[in-house]
Length: 422
Image (cartoon, rainbow, N blue to C red; front, side):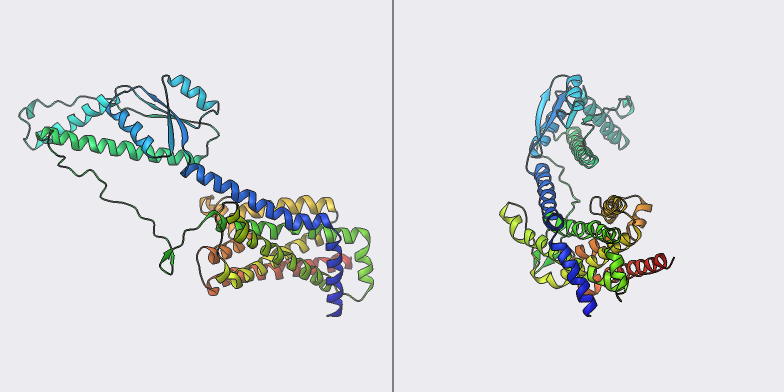
C-alpha cells in the first residue's frame, strides 16, 4: 500500500504542476457542454418558436392554393414570402438565401375539382344515382405536382419534416374536396356540411410519468451524460502522453530499479485519474443544475439519482483509464500517443451514439456500436437520466465497463512485461 500511495502521490504532483493540462481536463469540457447545449436548444427553438421564411410561387391562384397558403400560415412555423417567378425562387434558394421554396402548379384547383367531380360521378353512376349515368365518360386528367426547392445545405431531417407536413396538408384538402363534391351532387350544397371531415384516427405520445407528472426529456438531460463521457474518455490523451513521457525521459527506468511492479505504477495513475473523472462529472452536474437555468436553458433534476449516476461515472472512468494506460504502454513517442489518442476518442464518440443516434446508423455500424465502451456508458447514463430504471437494469453495462478496464490493464501489464523481457 505504501508503494501504491507513493505512486499515487507522484501522479498527483505531476498533474497539479501542469496548469495547462488541468485547464484542458476541467475547463474545456465545461465550455463544450455549454456551447453544444446552447446550440441544440437554439435549434429546437428555431424549429418550434421562430418562423422560417419560405418562398411561395402561386401559379394556381385558386381555392386550393388559397387553402395551402392559409394552412402554412396557421402552422406558425413558416413566414410566407410570395414570388412571381419560379426561376427567381429557385435561384434564391440554391444560392442559400432561403431554405425552402414551394411552387404551386397552374390550374391545380380546376384540375383537382374536375378529377374529384369525375370520380364522384362515376361512383354515383354505379349506384344509379346519376340521371345520365350512361353518359359518364372518364376524361384523362394529368397529375399535378407541387414542386419543392431546398437549399443544398439543408439537413435531411428538415426536408423529411416539410415533405410529410405538406403531403398531409394536401391529402386533407383532397379529402375535403371529395366530401364537398358528394354534398353538391346530393343537392345539399347550401346546407350545413353532412360529412365530418375531422380526422377520426389521431396520434398521442405517451410519456413516462413520476408522481402522476409526465417526464419530458430536455436537451440538458441528453447533453450532460453524452459530453461528460466525452470528457472522461478524453483523458486517454494526457494519460497516454504522460506514460510515454516517463519512458522517454528515463523516469520509468528509475522506477524499474526500485522493487515496484508495473501494476503498482499503473494503479497510482488509475487512482489519480479516476478522481479527475469524478471531479469532471461533478462539475458537469453542477453546470446542468445551476448554470443552465441561469442562462435560460433547461436544467436537470438529479438529487434522487446521484448514487447510481456516480456509479456509472466511476466505471466509465475506469474504462477510459484502462484504455489510456494501454495506449501509453504501447506507444513509443508522444507523436504517436497524441494524435492516435485524439482520433480514437473521436471514433468512440461517433460509435457511442453521442453525435448520431445508434438506431439511425447502418446495421453493421449498429453492431460495432454495441462493442464500444462509450456506448455502454452512454446507455447506462440514459437509463438513469431518462428511463428512471433501477440498479439491476444498469448492471450489464457496469459489468461490461469493468471487464473492459480489467482486460486493458491486463493487456498493458503483459505487453510491458514481454517488451522488457526482450
